[in-house]
Length: 330
Image (cartoon, rainbow, N blue to C red; front, side, top):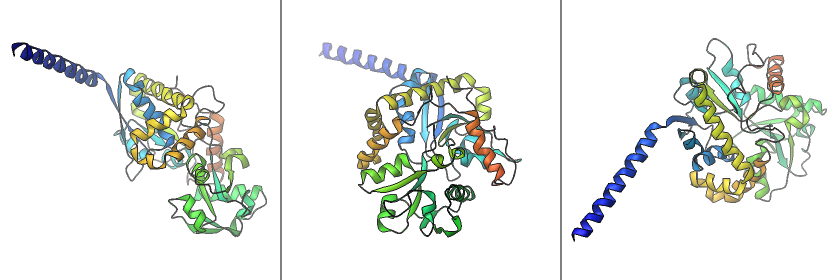
């Protein structure tokens, strides 16, 4: 009996030491709040692989992932309640101008090229922009959205005024196209386009960037709070270094990365085929031809903001080089 009591005492002491060590380790780590732009998906896989593989922990960081508020990730990051988050170059633009400009900066590109475009049922004549004439397009009624479609249509001899604009209520692109409630939808191919493929729905698709390079802007991007970056440059670099390792892992191991994503977002397991297919597609998009993940091309960023200025879509002039930096990447 004495021997058993002694063993139990030793095990209890060991457990206490391990617990105290773990608590001390967590207490020593810099806490980072990261806000998503939407529910977890394959745009975010590098974040979850960096958490799972201990890249953040190795860098002395403890990262908490939160869902965006109604105002979006930009507001939470600007307020300082989150240090990093996910945004988009186009949606950042209005936030960067005027007296109430938000103190945010894009510090990394999640993928190198804009893979968004228009998807439609195969054979309905919309494989190129001019074919949208006379068809129902699901619109968000955004000035930038409509100016984009107008420009790519005119470049192909089309007339945007002949497009039937339907207020978008699309939550499932496959169902919307199959039911013929709409004929054409603006999608990000890595998810909605791949979803059509895995569902066996034959489609036509054209990417805006293939029609006009001005639309090869950065979407999505990682943003940070300006004050945080200024006061914590080394921590910011450490965060992006660990995040970069997460995306590099996803590039080299898309299936394993998809498994990790689904462990952190179990609701995706019901659509595992789409997650695997999307992950394989993005493995070639995260870096594309760039030598390092996250890098911005200065002129490509500026070209899109110049276009917004030329079309007077912001209500005020925007410095085309504002809102991004490569300074915190490795």
